[in-house]
Image (cartoon, rainbow, N blue to C red; front, side):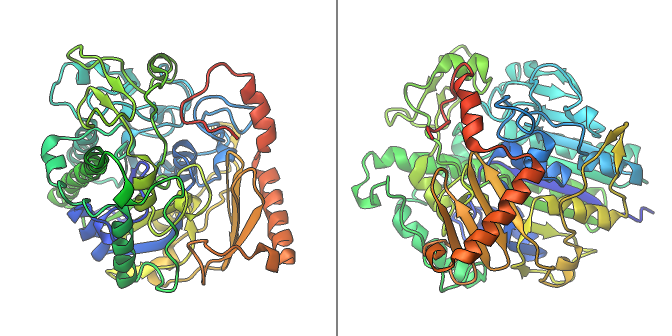
Length: 539
């Protein structure tokens, strides 16, 4: 009989704080809701504001820059920004294997700079016994690039299977891995990493899923944001005194919005993407129950950053998207040309479309917070987090308000399974663990006060206790009292200059220790690089 719990870590992509049902959203997520109401929901758990940095931090228990992932997996600067998981860190899989764990992964990797040739930054070289997924960070759900089984490219599996849909396949492969583990290694515990790309753009979904949301969002983003806040307060996730942030100033009131049919379709497809993921999570839960593993498996669910407000313009550089960045294919599997860009004349969802859902809906996804993926304000770094473990969590349906961060996941798992964090791996000295175990939080909603830090593209923040110092690059530091104003609507920096100075000094010390390079230096390097991705904003 195994004495150590199994671990299933489920990560999804670019989903807002309040999209799923158990966090106040309109999207139907019965399987996640089931886990939430029988487990724990965290209200102040923080990710990083971008895909690759979050994944690197989650997997290693370090801050992103320490792992080599400063921005994305495209090299954009010197050390700390190589875009490649380095050898000064260990993954959860590498840390758990000495404790007797088998380790499996299904889904998006996105922490290796080489997208086509196996390197020591690929999953099979970083502790996983079985891998199926993509090395790239995004792409078509019908025919993605860099589809890989083990170390071998298997793009042909999608090309030849007209029923292929990446969200479904991620779920099905995770189910396969769980069942094969039970048949071949039943005496051993396992770590299963399930990394969805949903609901990252492009907006691709099945018509039957989209149809389920017809009319769901017709009241528009303004009224829906207000309704979400009411539900969040009723659930005990946010405080009734926190002010709802204003609608993004770049967006019109819903009553004045044009092309409503297209705008609604965008949100309906987005919701269908999350819905499809939840259906797949249901199959994973079924596999755990069928193999007798459900009760002694810790399941953790979270999103890699806040909702994404990135626009895909009609004049997007298709050549760059297809060949340089490998984020898309120019034609469908049937040879039809893909229509790129958020043009209202084209309804999203099908394989021959490539769109995103835009600023206004992202603003709603992040209710009640402000800003988005890329930024270190609450809208960029706040994630819904669910812990579920029947044999290990007694406070079923409990809510935890303790501030936590991605590096804490590694520390938590190491304590739970009795594994030691290594000082060396294959002759390389490993950086000390940055996270704090959340095992005590499973019992009681408290942890020793410690600072939390962020930096991405010059956007930066530090949180210590109730105080959060945050900067939208290249602007000045802002200060917020997170007990009174977690939605960051009242900047009190001018009232507490000594506190701003103290926290900013702590941030600078952390940034230097962790290899954060000033944004000005990075921009100088980037100006000399060929090409520019469509999502990169002018600073």
